[in-house]
Length: 92
Ligand SMILES: [Zn+2]
Image 1 (cartoon, rainbow, N blue to C red):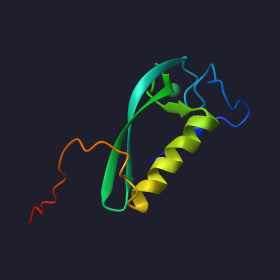
Image 2 (cartoon, rainbow, N blue to C red):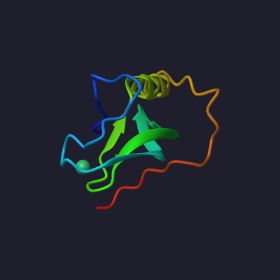
Image 3 (cartoon, protein in one colour):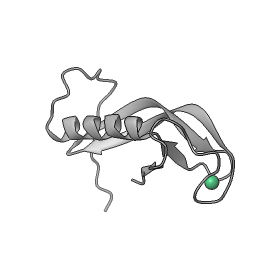
């Protein structure tokens, strides 16, 4: 999963996408984080490139996302709301 962080500005989004140079607009997105066998859908603000869809996070948000991924790995998900069931199916 490619989480891109712009290091020069901790709180602000870059104006131009580092991948394609497109305009970046702040939006609320749902980021899917996986840790171990669990998955979390995280609603978060992000800078979204209007051309290629690249998502950019502030350093602060990236840290929060890392913490959530970490909690998933350690199964510390008591404060997460369960939204469904995950299943594994093998297709031969
Ligand atoms: Zn872009």
